[in-house]
Image (cartoon, rainbow, N blue to C red; front, side, top):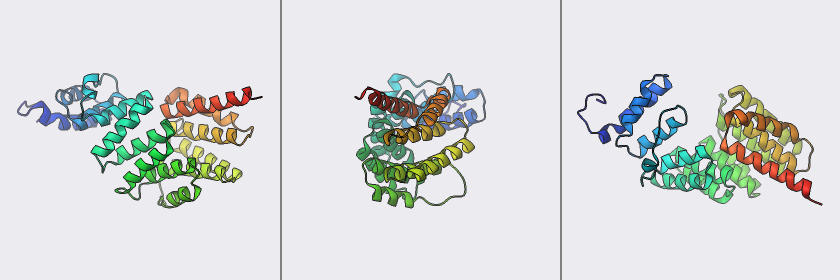
Length: 272
């Protein structure tokens, strides 16, 4: 159908995009050609898929003009995430979530950008809470809601959301981040050693799942942040690991938190 020429480019855009994604996953060169077909007359879904692919392979490009289309909020959000443009990412993720109320990805993107990127905890919680109306047992959204509540000192509410995360046998990123958030909650409620154990566990699980990954780097920098916050001298090792790992993964979220921890340290040094 894609090669036959019997259908318009717009009719074929999502089919070409899906085929291109399959070819990309298989490591085949025709992925680029198929994405070019998908982008001849794209819709919001094929634009978003091409934007995602452009971050995983060279030669796949979504033009600024295509991103500027009114229906391209998802693609704009993904591009802004990749560039570390948090305000732009958040605004477009909110539009994306309003447009696709049932989209788990939109809720995750909005709640993540609001918290990790902008530290706007209330707005992050609101995005996660909206997503939970249609995905009530999703571990990622439950964790994002809990994390935002910890940051606004609602420890009881945060624990309630964490307790709703279902037990699971397999390790994935959502489970690891929930372990880290439990560590954060323990630190904030004065259970320092429990917090260190939980963060250390999250770091070990992240390393087991994907050595040298962004999630491993993030767990390290967040542990360093809590050590700095309580005036401990145990921040240096996890911060150093986070910096080293981020040189390879170049995660905008981790980079933002490394800068924040370093700024806090600098202000402490300058304080009389």
